Image 1: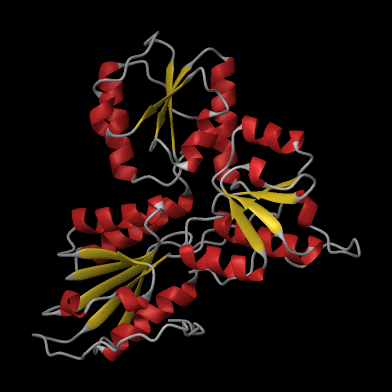
Image 2 (image 1 turned 30 degrees about the vertical axis):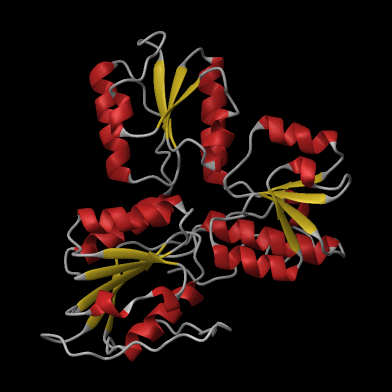
Length: 350
């Protein structure tokens, strides 16, 4: 496994005990895990905006759904707000990776804000699909979770045409105007299996249901789910590093349990790993959501090392090398030269 630098938290963490178990202890470390290209781009965008324009730079909603990332950006001078009307007129504001509706864009313009759009390009793709299908007089069944920023942003691009379907069960009750002109789209961070179950149930009711031109669930979400499926079948316990409001992190816990893990828990930090989780556990699977920096995974591995889980085997199911360009406002440095981080990348791919 490649060397990963360790960053120690200021909070003192109680050491885990190395208690005996029946057999050899080991860790199965899922790969890919952690930061995806869209998250990397969004976080670097806020950092670059702070460098370019100075603090404060405002960010609508959490730039990505990870408490550690948000806290670190706040310490650098970012101010997170719920809506653009909280931003002082004329200030710089960054739209989060989850995307926004046209109404939010207009609201920022009305206040004279300098908006920087850090929407993940894969989310932008779904926005464009919604606009196109609405223009072609289709009703859009958007598979996702009501209240999630991404769903709100996508629905806002075609509000009169979008109906949100939250679960497979809702597929059995949703009502459409014309069953011959219906298409499904999805939130990018869902469980692949549950999404396809929802689609299949929708198609049973609406045989002419059309598919999006390409898969809406992002490559990173799918890759992380595939990796944890392989790990879970051999794991007594799976630990997913990620925040509670991170849809893809929560889904990884669900997928791990569905594919054979005897137990699975989500943590933000290593100090949340509980001693009793490890009682009798030989094999621990570890992964992280797509908005989680690798340093947080390293801290969990260090904690497990204290408990005797020193044998780490990386279980790799895919390679990722995708990178996205930064928002156009940030591709040059203050002297006008192309910035060396114009592609948004800064972390090694895992």
